[in-house]
Length: 119
Image (cartoon, rainbow, N blue to C red; front, side):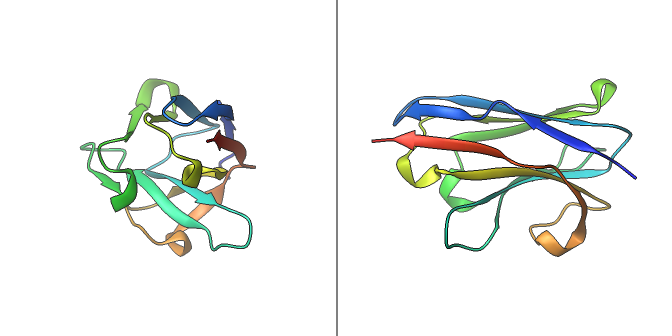
């Protein structure tokens, strides 16, 4: 069983930046960041493999968000720059066996952290 704890959410103005962190209680393989806005489905934002550093990004965040990981700390990060109001959502960290853009392939989830971008 792996526990995931997110941190770093908050309120920021459009154009600003936030850095999310997700600390895992043990070794994990692929890690992903998802988000869910009110009334919408949970969607992938970015994902990273634990070995090799392969990454995946949702088209709308490419060039603005960067996912990275520190294997020694069992921690994954999401650097979010040039934030837009449409980025407002609860952001969830997830862990799975392989890099994927599907939420169904991730077995472990954090509790979520709110990101609010004001216009």
